Image (cartoon, rainbow, N blue to C red; front, side):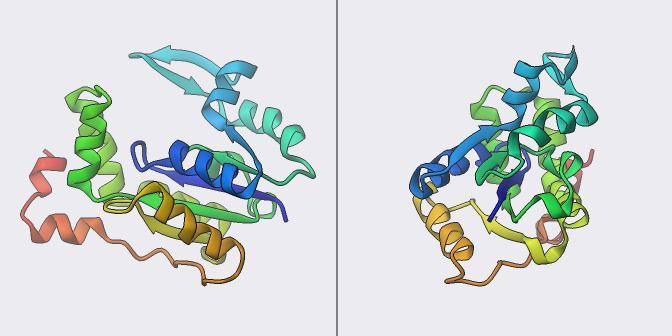
Length: 187
């Protein structure tokens, strides 16, 4: 058993789910963004955001994770770790309207909300996770209308082999198009 990653667009619940999962499974948890900032992989700030060097972050993370069983969260993980370094990648997803409300509640600006929701609609993090870790290591979980506890319990069942992986299949783009909302997220 090795590293379990929690990935997803901002606002899908990565940190909350990862902390709860780590607590329930009695595993150590690391927020990769916090590690990047604390250990010098954040190379600069642009518009209040840290720009992270994924190559620096990789060099920092590898000695930390080697031979350990732990939970990592962060949307950059597919750009940092390789397939063989990950036991399982948990991909969190969230419906665009709900994600938009979550990001607004965090105080994100209109452009940042639109960019992050558009990325979720297009499945960018999902695509990156599948390419980096392989579809056989990615389990997709929709956090839209689920409690943290229910989401974590579903993930634990996957980890323990009680349930199969939830193969990535969410298609927000078709739903947004069906609702006539394309211009809302892609002006």
